[in-house]
Image 1 (cartoon, rainbow, N blue to C red):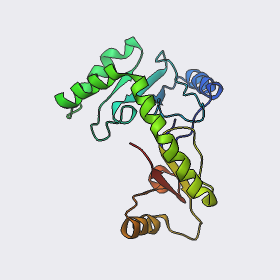
Image 2 (image 1 turned 45 degrees about the horizontal axis):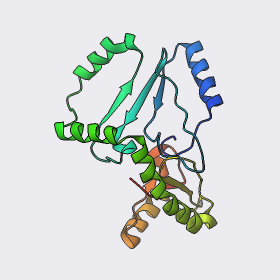
Image 3 (image 1 turned 30 degrees about the vertical axis):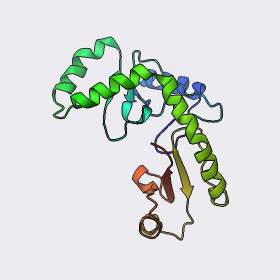
Image 4 (image 1 turned 60 degrees about the horizontal axis):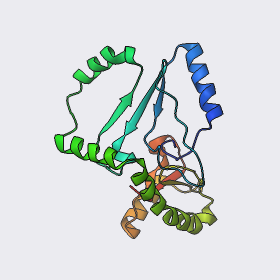
Length: 188
């Protein structure tokens, strides 16, 4: 599922992207942040970290560790020296505590995460039910709802109003290049 909308990519489209990138000698960087957050029997497809593909994984999202800022990469072995050079220039690192929590999360495994995602289903259904008159974008992944707002409304003023008047925090779509939308998160 993609960020910011939670939209899923088909395996056919992914295969075509890999082919296009390979033909142009461009690396495909695949964001696997929401790999476990799928609904309605949708399947997440992920490219293999082979020549031309780098996968980015986030423990922060996948295992509900928002704020811990820890993740990992999967890449072809021949990139190891280059990746170490990049890593050497990164001045901040995940704390030892965050690393230990991440190890425990991996030990609990994907089934633990999938159970947590199942608990989001009734929340997701209720949100779509309530927002149905606004025709929200219904994604099959992540934990966001993208709400299209009428063009006469200013999204930043809407975000401010919802925060101040209702205690509801929304993100303006313009933060993601989706002007005219508001993003509502329903799970972390």
